[in-house]
Amino acid sequence: MSHTTTDEPVRQASGATVPVLAFAGIVVAVMQTLLVPVIKDLPRLLDTSPSNATWVLTSTLLSGAVATPIMGRLGDLFGKRRMLIASLSVMVFGALLSALTDALVPMIVGRTLQGFAMGAIPLGIGLMRDMLPRERLASAMALMSSSIGVGGGLALPAAALVAQHTDWHVLYFGAAGLGALSIALTLLVVPESPLRAKGSFDLPGALGLSAGLILFLLPISKGSDWGWSSPTTLGLFAAAVVVLLLWGLMELRVAAPLVDLRTTARREVLLTNLASIMVGVSFFVISLVLPQLLQLPAETGYGLGRSMVVAGLCVAPLGLTMMFTAPVYARLSARYGPRTTLIVGLVVIGIGYAGGLGLMSAAWQTVVTSVLIGAGIGLAYSSLPALIIGAVPASETGAANGLNTLMRSIGTSVSSAVIGMVLANTSTDVGGVAVPTMHGFRVSFLIAAAAVAVGLVLAFFLPRRSPAGVSQLRASSEEDANLARAKQALAGAVRPPHGFRGRVLAADGTPVPRAKVTLIDRHGRQAGATLSAEDGGYALAVPARGPYVLAARAAGHAPLAHAATHDGDRPVDLDLSLPGETVPA
Image 1 (tube, helix red, strand yellow):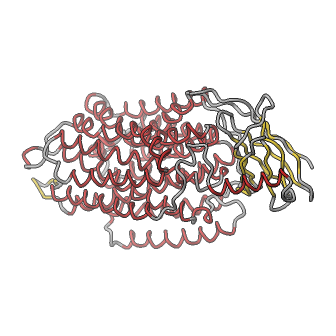
Image 2: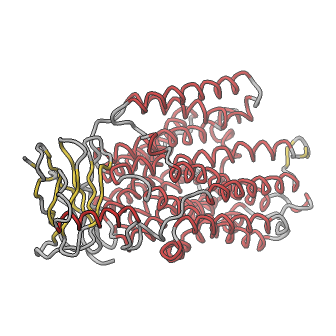
């Protein structure tokens, strides 16, 4: 028997780690939102046609969709902090490229590179899971998950102010500066996770998924320009179905796939991802409708005649409320579980859209609608990573949350296409200009309410679990069963399993009870899990001989990942010494 420790030392997470990771998420949202105030002016600014100008937005959508699951998997394999810095670095380079050009093609290239930053959200959530004690994890993940809305809400009025009073290229210089600051803070504050998935990067899987996503999202984003029934649109949709089906069959045959479809097909993961699409749809509808309603001239009879900056300020509470719901989510989830919190969030969103149907005649009414819907989306978004993390092995956190973030992006993309089509088909012609109508706005809100209803149905079918498996030191029923078996084995009631056994110890040698010990096989999959007994003892059976990683974590201690090999028929005695106490927040 031989074993080696991980070659990278475990660094302790400090109280600044969570704010720095959340700031990275806010930077990503700013990058996405900064062009919203100048969308209508892009053809003039870039001296091109409106159809070509939309590629500036489409390119970011496509690259973000491709990068999100890929960066998550690379983070699982090679280090989440390393990939987070890589994502932000590519974004900064892309922002600088866009800031220095007035030409269409370099602008599209720059925006494509900026889309790579979308991987920061799942990477940040993965880092939190690997480093934080359970009692801090729920609120931290809620803040990270909500940061995309927070950044969007704050960036909208700021970007409008910049666009009105200075050169629009300043927007990109600002995004690059924020990205550089985020990289510096990450290097200074965020430790690298010691956990690694085993196996190699699935390059064919990455190429196949990229091709399938591009074929699917391209007609969604360009369908209104090409025509929804045109041969190009329908052909791309058909090609997407074929490519994604072939990709799925290939992934099922690969030893270390980019996306473990067997895990993804679990009821909890599948329903959570489908619900994420619905939350994404509902989030984007209000972001599209309210700014237009606020800026339309009062002469239309329903427009509120506000400036670009005032419109941004009225919608800003959407993001701010999402930020303030993070601690509320932690308390609700600790008591009732993330499933219940998701249901509550969806109900609040539904109330917001139902009330919004009658609250469209004054600016203060749009603020009320923004606050309500922001609170619901904050609760719903915060629940999603907790549901995913509770259903996948530790080694798949990055990839699984990357896929979940991708589902939200698909929801916003579908929402953008559908609402854009609705507003275009219900608009009236005023002096040769298509003006959205109140009927179109109300139909858009009804579509959002329908998406919320579908999300609620999906959420009710999620399995019930004990509250806050990620935020409380309470084991699931499976963990309790494992603990009971371990106690029996250590007491001699049953024959010790052929695997690993020993004690979980603190840095000073004292035993650590109820520490979670996870066994990860060479493919990065969970092969077993248990909780240590009162004397710190644990026992884990192995399914086969070979190399494994034992990951141990407990509240108040930094996590440990220990590589070991089982090569015989006798149990391997292995004590796991947790590196030391984490610094309290």
